[in-house]
Image (cartoon, rainbow, N blue to C red; front, side):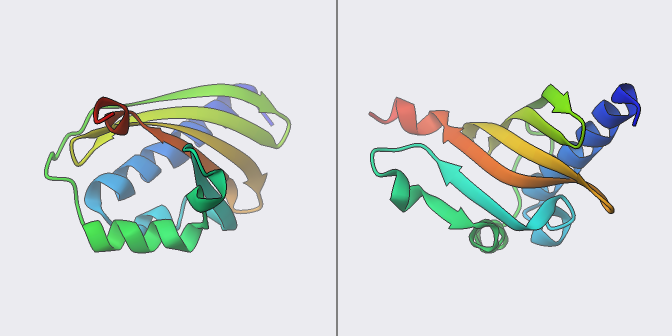
Length: 127
């Protein structure tokens, strides 16, 4: 595959992820994730901060769309090695700032997120 095309394809998946997040619509997000994807976030008890991706989809649907129609975001494709990749996504969502590290794999259906590791910077401010 062409490296430049891979970068563009990964950015397209992550733009779709940001769209689904902003709209509070898991049907859009499900297009971006592998069915067996996992979700982790940092904290004192890391076992309490991991879930199957369905937990994230349910949370997004429950919380609904972001009030900000144009939240700030960025995407950095950090590394691609054949059919695997890592990207950094920054976004504001519901007034909170997040940094995500996405692991992706190329599948017959295109690039899919297999893990989402995130940090909520807003939680840092409440300490």
